[in-house]
Image 1: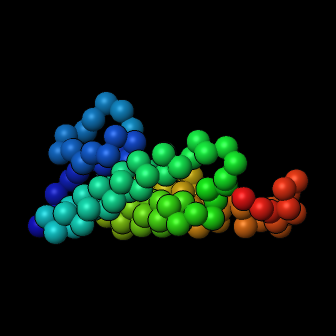
Image 2: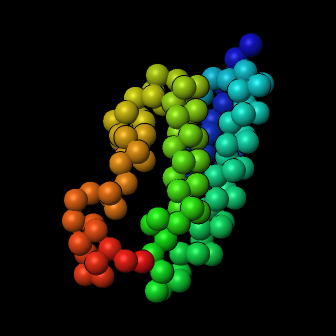
Length: 121
């Protein structure tokens, strides 16, 4: 049986009661909730790893495996929230084009490879 939950990607939480801050409302079975929690944990781990690599000034992180893992995991997380989301949550994700934006990274646009450094990291 599905129950209502409130998900915050920012804080990495799933709550039974509506929080004050940012959240997306979902309906999930215990199994779906467990799967969603695993995605949140994986995204948080990717975020920590990419945080340590980001400040390296001479190396672009755009094509690194950590950046790819982070992008894939956050996209999977939003896709799961969309699947489980209430109609208002799904509308929010559609209105903000969140999944679409996560699929189209800016460094694949024409001209990126011809930037000042010749596309070299």
